[in-house]
Length: 417
Ligand SMILES: NC(=O)c1ccc[n+]([C@@H]2O[C@H](COP(=O)([O-])OP(=O)(O)OC[C@H]3O[C@@H](n4cnc5c(N)ncnc54)[C@H](O)[C@@H]3O)[C@@H](O)[C@H]2O)c1
Ligand SMILES: O=c1[nH]cnc2c1ncn2[C@@H]1O[C@H](CO)[C@@H](O)[C@H]1O
Ligand SMILES: N[C@@H](CCS)C(=O)O
Image 1 (tube, rainbow, N blue to C red):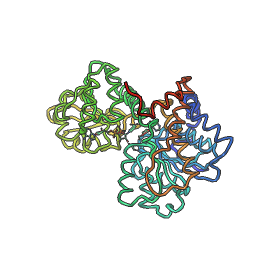
Image 2 (image 1 turned 45 degrees about the vertical axis):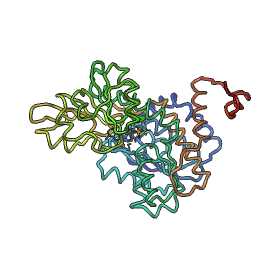
Image 3 (image 1 turned 180 degrees about the vertical axis):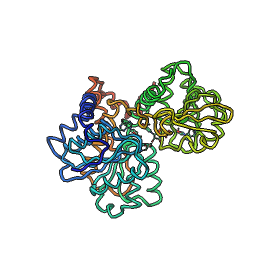
Image 4 (image 1 turned 30 degrees about the vertical axis):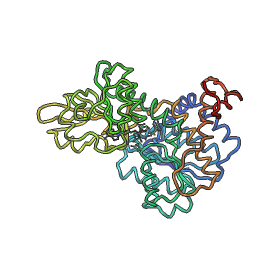
């Protein structure tokens, strides 16, 4: 076992936090027990590039119980939680990563994971998969496949596959119903506000919150903003989603208009340059800017620097930009996904990552048991349904079954009024 973490003496603190999340991840715990009994991953090496925090370490431990050798790094230079990383290392995982890596360190750590010559990769945003294709092509012949955690990663991998550049199969975990309907919506909805409120200690009630993007994440953020008492304005580029936002009760307008009202603006589009110079120029004094989407490109920080006469960090996670006329704008967590990159961001709740990481564990098992051709695959429906059933069971919820008569009715066309 090898590791490179900030401070291994933080392990006891990390272990306590891991124990706590395990109590709220019953489905993954059940899979862990099955893995422990059957050792289905014996002889397999797994390399992951996922936000390194207690719930992710619990996924690593699950795979290790299945017999795999596991090497892990973070998928964002700001999101690793050092106590969890130290605990993971002390529990037998190969861990490389620390909070506040430079870009160079970030890629060095991905290389360290790849040095274990993994058979299966788990990625979030596809940085590790791209690195293999660009710089570590000698590893490709050994790789059975990968699973990808997030919307943007899948979008990039599909583009790569379309261009004939993808060289192994990938399972699109994000596209499972039990992923995006819960993780992206309720997970991002809660963890975004958890981080913004923890970072700013500000009231949401009575504020105007602008949400850019009404996809699965945007829907969750808008819903929680409304629940916390904010007035919510949504901006979109997709007419159907814009209509949906309107009928869900939100105001919808162009971003050029929306920014004039924003007390807090949150991006969740997966797109570049959603908020740029012309939007900053029309913002109110004191506007809080946060991204809960993709990398650090949704809010254009360079434009913000260009139009500011000064900028400085006023604490670890808040950067103040002073414009020529004296207005001040505040960017959280350097414009990286606020729910994980800010020091107050703990990521999604454990109950949510229980579902997402159970999907990951079962997708890895599927990759280990099946030879797939190159391509981007959905999570098999049996896995999606199994995870939903296990979660309902863990929540103590029973549901009805179709009767034979009902099944027949639903599959026939003869009966009318
Ligand atoms: N912070 C987190 O923990 C977390 C969790 C899940 C996903 N994500 C990331 O969040 C992003 C969004 O994910 P999603 O699942 O909601 O994707 P999605 O595709 O469901 O939604 C994105 C929405 O943004 C809209 N959009 C695109 N460009 C826009 C623009 N310029 N202005 C306004 N709207 C625009 C699209 O039309 C779409 O409706 C992705 O990058 C994803 O990887 C983050
Ligand atoms: O607490 C967490 N631990 C690990 N991964 C997380 C957590 N919260 C959200 N995500 C994952 O991060 C991806 C975007 O980068 C999301 O798809 C989500 O599944
Ligand atoms: N790993 C990437 C994916 C976000 S969608 C990030 O942390 O920004």
